[in-house]
Length: 87
Length: 550
Image (cartoon, rainbow over all chains, first blue to last red; front, side, top):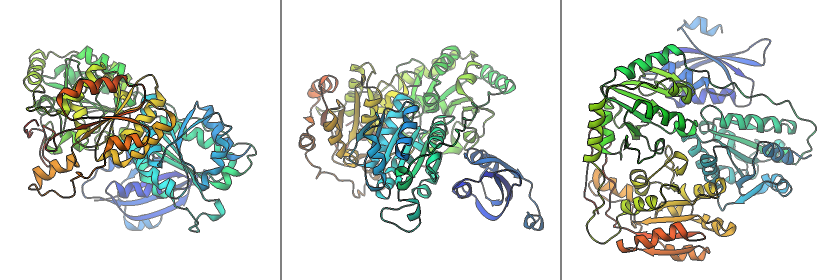
């Protein structure tokens, strides 16, 4: 199953790699990434398409939320590929 | 002020008076500043020992331990200690030197990406890019390491930042507010489950000690009178001689604890994470039990076992709201009968030393007042099974990582955290060799740390598994060519004695408790001795193998 996770991260050294590495280490596959600046703040937004066969997305979100540079982590509803490309 | 002085000043402001480390090229500005810092530096003889000593210091003091190493090999030598702190939730600040910022990324001499290497095993990490950020980074690192579920924080410090002049400081960021309290609705739901339970068991984990919830936990046990079992790291949550305590659970747990859990209809997990060594085959663990899971770390709840009631937050506050005494007289009586029926026996045949009996008598003679540190292997399990442990900070063990070599440096750290309490490192002849160089640290600082070296001339736990699960095909476990450990100790300036007969146990215990300085007691045991009981791999905790005492 594939879901989309949206992260708001502080623009801090290592923030992106730390988040992605955690997702992979916890048994998920990252199949797509888009990023943008969060206008008017010191954050950036990552949308990650993430797949797993048997792991819990809810637990993953809570694990991501523990990262110091993560401002928010949301599990989005699955969306069509066109919408993801427009992120 | 130089960056290095700013770093040490910020540590001093947080009350740091002792650090553990080993100097080298990129960290030299910090070592120069240490001279005038008022901070005591303990020179270990391998950086891994610095991390383990800081870990031991933290577990006993309840405050972050600090270790320092240089770049490259110094930093990579810290990695095992950082991972140990991560897996056991120990507050640790690891400071590594780094090549100067213009050299970073050029494969310079002694340059490694320690920030990248340690990403999966730290709670957070920093590369210091500006001198004026140093006080803020120390402030944040301290708060991150010690708040919520504690863990290690790495600070990678380039040499030019440490040696440069500080002009001002960026503002400090105040720590995050404490964890939100659990909702009253959830607490009511948990209380109702407890009240209705017929066969409840309290499953005590390491989070109780780490979270400062010892008093609240003991009040909860006293109020509910529910039988208690614990994980390896939960030992001491109640004193192990508390009548309601059934013993450690899991792979080398007691029959009483594993049986009670398997038969339970309600498991109240407190600061525990359903680790595989504790649960055995997960899908057969406590098959009829509903779960109340209390933990400061919400990510642990539901990770491996669904929680019927999830109480994520401060343990003390939640436990205080759960003082419900269920009507479980028959169940409690059953559990205590199990405990009696499967009580440990110490009447091993022969005249050789039966390690469980030695450990039981040692901890009993001190009335549980020693700080026991362990290495990893059979002796570690015997300590957990047989020693009197009155509180978690008196039993330091590498639980999650299972790192051989932890015990001696952890005992050094424990001594600095509480010099009034005798630290005894219980080790094996495999484990002691991993960090045996720290005998030099005992000698250098005159530390009265004791070592009980239980020697079976083999890597005993691996040998036991090869015997039981690999058709006795013994592969690379024979250590019969060990050095003479008493002579090794003496060559480092540490007193030593050897025992190999049951009649010498009293003399050894007296020496361990009363010898004025460092001492190594080399204890020879039967190489065929195994740890029992044992839940075989891939089985539930209902399957427990037993073997002969030797």
